[in-house]
Image (tube, rainbow, N blue to C red; front, side):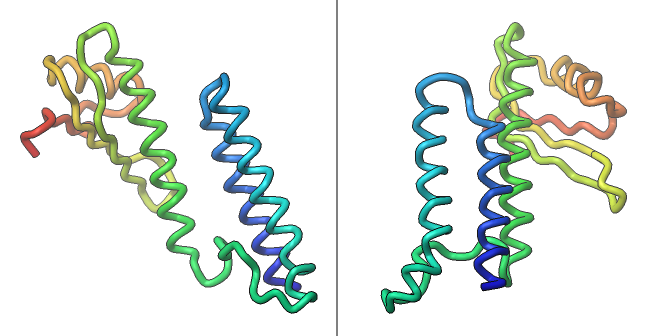
Length: 147
């Protein structure tokens, strides 16, 4: 029963984070429905186990997998950061293809690596550093295809 509660809590937190990151419109409604169904199946899994239908249908995100949770949260953040940087560079005919964030032990953003498609790498570096409140030397920008 303890594992079920942990699973439900972990899934609720991940679902809440994903819902926050979803765009408005039809995709958001569809995604909410899917996330709701996943939560319903997770809540129903103990009942299915009582009926002898086997183990819960959904794997646990919280039990014995803290590294996977951390990787998932990091990946979600980096996808959101890449989208934010693309919006920032939109008027400069450039877009961010990938962004990697590096944190220090206190949880503060230490440096960022961005892969940019289009021109103006130095201009992009300055813009990203200013936007994120970092020193210019803490932002690494490479052109797509030259890594």
